[in-house]
Every structure is written in C-alpha cells, then in structure tokens.
Image (cartoon, rainbow, N blue to C red; front, side, top):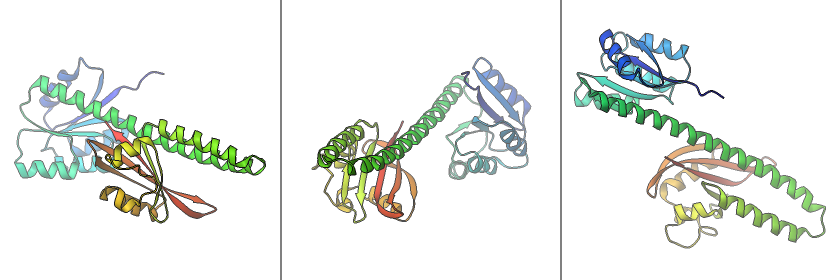
Length: 273
C-alpha cells in the first residue's frame, strides 16, 4: 500500500516568504500547500484532509496568526503547529502557545538548516502520536475481545465438572497475557481496592513498594492517578495524559459492567514517545 504524501501548509501574506519555504522544502518528499490569509489557510485544510504540519506567520491578513492557529487546533487538533514571525513580544508568544497550542515559535529571518530540522522533528512527533493512538486503540480492542472471551469461558465452565481447575488455568493464562502487554493495566473494584495489576503497572506505580494487588487505591496510587479513578466512576470512559515516573503516559479509564451494573474500573497506561 502506497504511503500518503506528507502535507505541509504554509501561511504568510508575503509571497516571497512562501516561495522561500517552498524552495527550502523542495528536496523533501513533502506536498507543500500555501495560503496568504487565515481564511484561505482554513479553506485549504478543509479541502486537503491529513495535513500534518501548519507553519503560519504571527501577522497575517484577515484572521491574525493566533486566531488562525486556535481554529486549526480546535478543528484539526492532530496537526502540528509552528509560528514563524519577524515581530512578536514575549506576551504574544505566550498567547500563541496557550491559544494555538503551538509546537514551536521560530523568529524571522530563520536559519535554513535549523528550520529544516525543526520541521523534520515536528513531523516525527506527529508520526509518534499517530502510532501511540493506534496502539491505544489496539489495546482497548484487545481488552474488549478478552472480556468477550472471558464471558464465553464462564458459560463453558458451568458445563464442566472440573470447574475449579479450568478456571485456575484460564486465570493463569489471563495473567500471562496481561503481563505480556506493552502497557500498564490496573483494575479496581467499586470500593477502590486494587484487584488487578500487571507487571508494567507494578513497575510504573508501585515504586519499589509491595505489589499493588490487595492495596487501597487511594493510598497506594499517585494522587493524579487516583483522581482519574474517581472520574472513571462517573463516566463510561475517560482519558488523560499524566507525567509518571520518568515519562509521559496516556491513561485510558474504562468502566467494567455486567448485566448493566457497574462491577469495577480498569485503567490502561500507554507510554508517549
């Protein structure tokens, strides 16, 4: 399957700036789109799905750079955003970062090699985020399939005379599967007692203390993780990005229910590269 071209949108009211950016990127395998106003930039983004990177001047016609990037963030949140400008004070930079969630602010005139490297790194961040999102989806699908398998196993166990042996074997296998997952998995009952923790969860959250299973989640878990547990009690699903240990993790909270009655909570911790 042929890989889709990397799309970059450059927005600047000066044509010579746009031509300079096109020349800078002409040797790369990029599809470069250009616009001279914020409105034109938004129209191109709507017309060309999958734009990975937007480079916009701070001062552009129509919408100013901050409003433009804010709308890009709201409508296409996965797109990486860079501000390229020859005039902006510190307050404007902070506002652009907060409103438009920009990746980097680069002053004019720029150094070609530094800008080229910055663009390559920004596109690498985009790619890593896509892979992490795909991994999160795969883990959730695997969990749902495993939940269905467990439900079928329960029906089969009822028809066997060696129920206890069969359940023990199934539980042993399930623990091996959980420990083999590349993400930390944590399960709690409705009272906040930790009833499931794979190896990754103990490495990430136990911090050298006794194993998590059997402990009270409110005292054993970091406050930010316990806060997500409490959120998960009131929602079918919730997500958050948390700094844990020496890295950043996307945490997915999911309620486990049987016969429409909530039975507990499960959290998955997916490392962000």
